[in-house]
Amino acid sequence: DTGVSQDPRHKITKRGQNVTFRCDPISEHNRLYWYRQTLGQGPEFLTYFQNEAQLEKSRLLSDRFSAERPKGSFSTLEIQRTEQGDSAMYLCASSLFGVNYGYTFGSGTRLTVV
Amino acid sequence: DQQVKQNSPSLSVQEGRISILNCDYTNSMFDYFLWYKKYPAEGPTFLISISSIKDKNEDGRFTVFLNKSAKHLSLHIVPSQPGDSAVYFCAASEGTGANNLFFGTGTRLTVIP
Image (cartoon, rainbow over all chains, first blue to last red; front, top):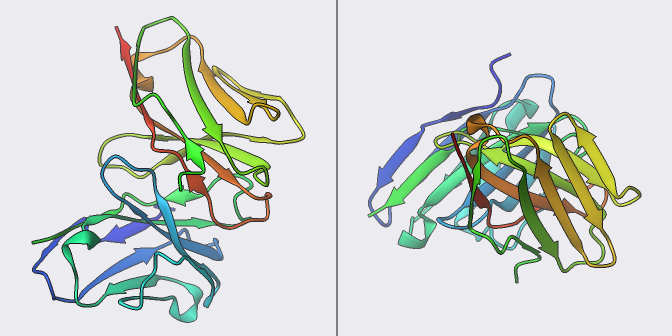
């Protein structure tokens, strides 16, 4: 088990471009989460999947953001028409039993919009 | 609106001494609290948690204390070691079955050898 993997580690994109990030959770974990962390802040919840179903979305997840988890395995987070305010670290986490024992986070994808 | 607050952005402690990291929360519906540790270029790592039915939970060198009436929790690390140098995040949720966490802004701990 290699933990939660995120790809890419870094992404620099021009404003207005679309970007897509991938997260591979721990294989036996059925829950997958996306968080966003901006400089000087703690992670903020974006969305959550149980298996392939997206069960909760934060109001932070504007209509430019879409997340999928086909087949309940890996997940993708797409940001359309990126803005400079989207620059942040995007963290993926997975778990088996909700928050009881904490999530396992990946190392994140750092997005810079120029 | 920051529902979980860590008012000390940084803390320096001598090796071998006690480190005390503090966290306050405003939402009275929070009943499960966690501490995460984060090293540079890595994701946060779960450290220790506490349910609101307890006021203390201990795991090795790490102890978390919860004061529900004051809406305050603290993480004690004793003795502190240089490898403990990291950013520590406090997090809270509404119930252990909840699926989203509310994080504080973090405290950077530096343990001086």
